[in-house]
Length: 194
Picture 1 (cartoon, rainbow, N blue to C red):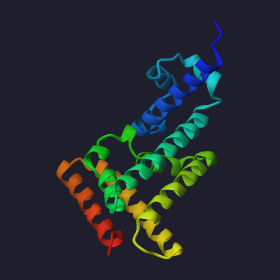
Picture 2 (cartoon, rainbow, N blue to C red):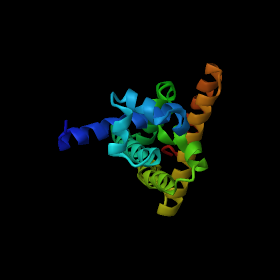
Picture 3 (tube, rainbow, N blue to C red):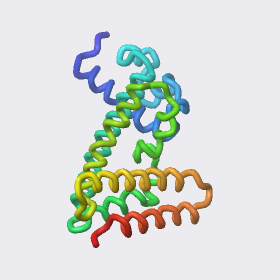
């Protein structure tokens, strides 16, 4: 039975969305194609009708997650009114975000995997996805010249990503909460309104 073009597009989207979540939860090597397809409600054989390889899927799944991240960050910053950075930092460095890696930050979840991979397309996707986040943070930092604002945005992003990753890595929930709180305070002290 032939699948319509619309159904094929819907199937591809379901696979990409499932992969995006599962890669963030388990890492690229933490789930195989068969289990990924099963989680998407499809057969293993259907994978190769949609993708040439798991690496190709990884790139597309990451690009999709990164596009969603940029949109979310813009919305969260805009909802912050007079304090867009504080709102974004509170959202990002929250226990809720920490505890849901499958729907959370792809950088905190997969940056180490990407750094070790030999997949140049994946690394390029991560670099491209970072630019809109740099822009969001740059816009929220109090009055800085463009170059200085970009440098501060990079430092802020590094603090956000690293703090979330570290808070997930420690087994002690009290220490994890302290990591998040310390990072929030540090970012707002350094980059918040004067």
